[in-house]
Length: 498
Image (cartoon, rainbow, N blue to C red; front, top):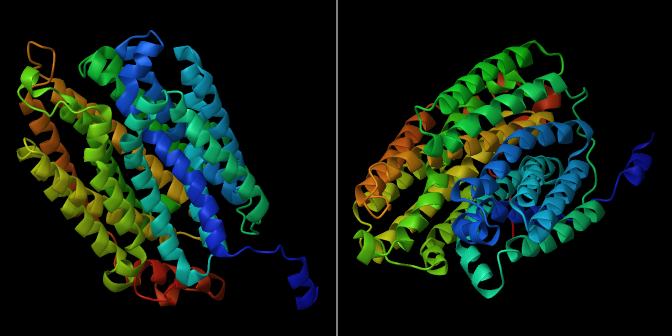
């Protein structure tokens, strides 16, 4: 085939910015659905005539499904085409939203949320498409912006939930994202061409089943521990079962000819260190989303603390965090080029520690809460985006989907652990009114600050930029990947986008 023919037969590429907007629409809708229902669970509980314990399955089902399906869809994207699997993820996310929007029973709502979990695959697939379709010098900035959108979207869900429910109804928490999801799915099918970057092989359904079982057992145990009790046989049994199955899964993956998760890849220093930091960040961030609105909505005349804020007012108090996440996450590409992605992860962790300590000791007035939220948004925005860049830079193009999917998955697992443990700490020794004591919140936020101190220490182990792609290890076929690694790590700067 002559070069001219090859060029003619190649699929026409739209401008990479158009691709980014399409991906952002789908990923943004998924990110919103992570947290939209969190502040309005009492409303859903009353509407569906269920108990407080049962309604938490609206969150738990989504968490379990996303944890299981995210790495599987990432792997399928690497094997069969990222654009194709992105569209499928959007279709499943839309079907789940439709079921939840029309649900008048808890069972149907939970089924809808289980299907929505497939949307978790959109993020690693989007990272892979960016790596395949964007100019090398634009990849770091685009990955950082997409990661910032995910973090900010999760925070924005808490902010928007109140106005949507007050102005419409809780059903619109699913109808509104559904509109965006349909547009994103159609646009992705029409404008994003399929890449030739594929990983040959097949899905090992045995290891996929093992991964599903250990994740389900572990997350179910920690999610229900606050209701069952940490000393309950059910809690201990599920957590132990999850750990045992995890060990079996690791051994099976290591021996598999077609592993779902390449254990050699997981041993890469830049991968496992970023995964550890991601788990600790997830531990801190999702717990804040879950428990700070409760503190803000508590009536001071009843509990002696809080502001008696409405759902909408408490969401607006978290708005500085969401805005800062998005702004500074978008700046990560330029900042990484100047300071290096590793420095941003360490700095972001340190800012998160300061924010949580301020929240621990100064939550009696609105001013310190706004400052704390802004600092937290800066820290989380920088760290999440920089971690995504480092993960993408550390693996081959064929492994981008599964590596970034597992990183997101580990953050989710960390979030489940953080929310469960914080719930136990906050609610221990509740007052006579049944509300947590203020000391419970103090201890909970202090525990989260310790988690971010550990994240900063773990970030010190992230390899320096020059070790991501050592020149003597580079073959001619790996040269584009090596250049990308240096761009994302901040040692090679491409043209600044207009």
